[in-house]
Amino acid sequence: MPSDCISFRETNYFSSLICDYLDEKSKLNSFYNRFPKIENFQLQIEEKGMSFKLQSRAILVSSLHKQYQSTDISSKTLNNIESLKDSNTFTVTTGHQLNLFTGPLYFLYKIVSAINLSKELQATYPNYNFVPVYWMATEDHDFDEINYFNFKGKKIQWNRHAEGGVGRLHTEGLDDVFKVFSSELNSSLNATTVKQLFESAYLNHNSLTEATRFLANELFKEYGLVIVDGDDPDLKQLFTPYLKEELLKNTAFNKVNNTSQKLASTSASYKIQVNPREINLFYLKDNFRERIVFEDDTFKVNNTSIEFTKDEILAEVADHSVRFSPNVIMRPLYQEVILPNLCYIGGGGELAYWLQLKDFFESQEVPFPMLLLRNSVLIQTEKQKQKLEKLNISKSEVFLKQESLINKKVREISDIDIDFSEQENYLKQQFSSLFELAEKTDKSFVGAVKAQEVKQIKGLKNLEKRLLKAQKRKLADEVSRMVTIQNELFPNKSLQERNTNFSEFYLEYGDQLIPKLIQELKPLKGDFTIITL
Image (spheres, rainbow, N blue to C red):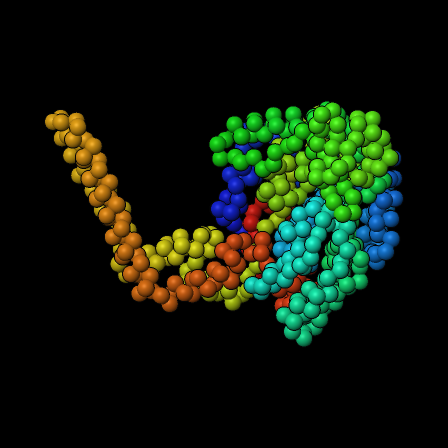
């Protein structure tokens, strides 16, 4: 299974912030702790080791055993859970929503990145243990983001009313989804396995948390993956000091706002990913997850009649900390408080908001983890690769927006020159003489000359567009083949990994799909990987 790569910047699918981070631009140094290079992990290990208590490890292991009590886990996963009791064991963590049937492909790439980085760290630092962790976003409440997956151009969707944290949702109604999905599958051995995976996960478990844990475990248990559900009373209890401070002091609001302003002022192209609230917590019960706000000296739960005085809400935190759910600002801190974590692996959007959090972490005296952009992958078949070669489309060109790709290739293969830039430059030179003449005679004439220059250049560009359009018609067969192959590799004109479900590739490659990804993906390499299967 050969692989190739292209820089993230060259794909034009990643923000300037993330590309500058990957290039280690010095202007971003203050927004993160250590850059994820293998030699930098020693200091991260030492820093995290000094701050993480054995008592926290014991609670974490106890909680994990409870969470896994109904799951058939591998000996490697069990050993990894047990090893978390030891002060020389650390985690590499990625997180993801509870998307139906894993959602888009990058669910796999995140977890493979965590597994492979753990393996690389183990080889480099044999005196320590490294455990890959998948953090399930069980407390998220945006059901519309996770209730579907795409399969061969069709949207397989779970239609139901949903409120509260999605992890607590009952799997009722997924039997109908299973029927729809099954009707799209053939009777091959791999298709049968896919059906069994879906059925076992979603029809044999009561909650979306249980179903997702089962599915992720089935796919990755032989690699020792540990799956964490943060919606846990014992783990939340470890977080109570931070919950209280968030309610009373608005520390996150102030720190993250200050960092965000600094980040935005660093470059006009940097976009702020998230904005903190004065209180970055939700109140969570089975049927709702609503923001906590402070108004009129009272803590109120938005869109409900629930209210607390200061003493009452502090008592609620002490007695029922599981009812307090961190938002996108507080969740990273929660994760780092309850895990002996060294590195967080996420997508570009995730890393962008993590870069807003370092000062906040420092104020809480919690080590800021190393931030690693997950592996990104384009999977192509050998046949698709050959088609690209016949069309003379390079690995960078295939990432171009479709119109740009077609225009570029039509110009290249056309038997006439469609580039009018030489004529445009000549026209500008002629008008420069007219500008000089206008300056010497009547300066009010300059505006008329400028208007004529704009008109002439615009006319020239329109002629170029018409000629290009005519050549596209003449080369319609080549254009059609370009469009077809790019649409296959970039469904909905976006990255394959953000659209396609793993099941499409599992039908073809079966239980060899994940081992091949494990073999090919190098998390610290820092490139976008192109794999030919």
